[in-house]
Image (tube, one colour):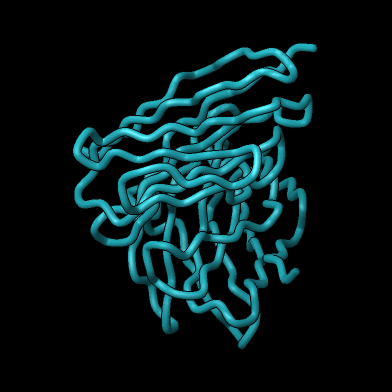
Length: 109
Length: 115
């Protein structure tokens, strides 16, 4: 079966750094996406990885290791507005997006 | 920036009734999707649509559901004989190409409440 695992919830302090991990087992792999979702809102695209390594976009970076079926999203200089759920999603061999359950990130002052 | 629009934002319907959820994808996008998210749960894929036909569908997308592109801009999800468990947020998404690096852009969703 297809499976994506992320921690359910994490807590971090404003100004700090947090790493959200994601492991996946899917039928085929055509890329991994990270989306941010605020409560009651739509997911918004954050990052994409298809090759091993780190992709940096401002305060956010995403890492991929295909051999390990592992990715992480790194958020630096945390702001209160970063409080949201972070969804890991993998594109399988049929280009279907398989979603993780999301990690709820709570930022404390 | 172009965006996916969905209407209505909230739909309240009696159990057993039919509902139609509407979406206008981004104009130059070719692939369209419907997702469901039950409150507090993960996003679930329902169906993908390309070239006026369904390209993939999940186990959730049974005979109760149908999709249609009635004209050049709208993409609709019809749910027949609604059940209490159909209550959820329904997101429409679109992407330009069926390529691994093309992110799907989501609409703001329709909150469907079945009474």
